[in-house]
Length: 211
Image 1 (tube, one colour):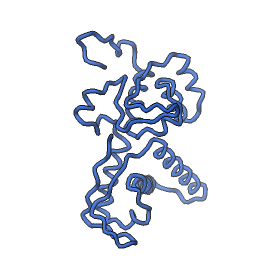
Image 2 (cartoon, one colour):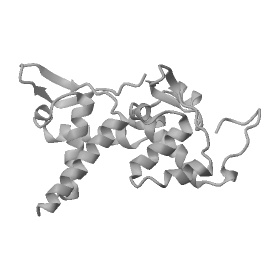
Image 3 (cartoon, helix red, strand yellow):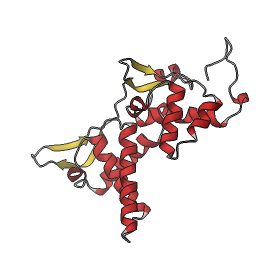
Image 4 (cartoon, rainbow, N blue to C red):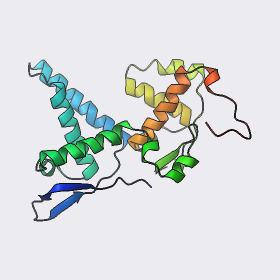
């Protein structure tokens, strides 16, 4: 099971109870946590714009990193705000990778060998609503009907979750529990299904490596 390495602090943090942290333990950020945070920030940005107080991109990004920092460290915002700027920059860089890269970048060599595009290994096993624990997810190519139904959703995230559910057999609640890198991995393959031609999916042979 994937557990991000802790972040060493150049300037240790002293908490309100007197505890001194020389490093910050990190945990994976879940897909639902990530999308909820961004949606809340989008709402804040829109509300401020309506009041004539526009939020620029730099402020939005810093607020996003601050929110993600509280999620991955488990520390409240008041503690994160005590971090020295270079330490926060290091944390923001780490968080950026955690929410933008696919699971392949965080796998061990053994996991990379075992994982395939159409049956990827999960960084963190998923306990689904049906009680089954999945260590990998098998993907199926959607038919034209599913892709047409997807377009009925106006929201981009709803479209993504609908078609991903069709390709994995999981419901939205289960998809929400995936780590962001695992979600990103699924999106990469689903995007292939939706946009590539049949020639991009050669039939496997007994001697060929898995796609």
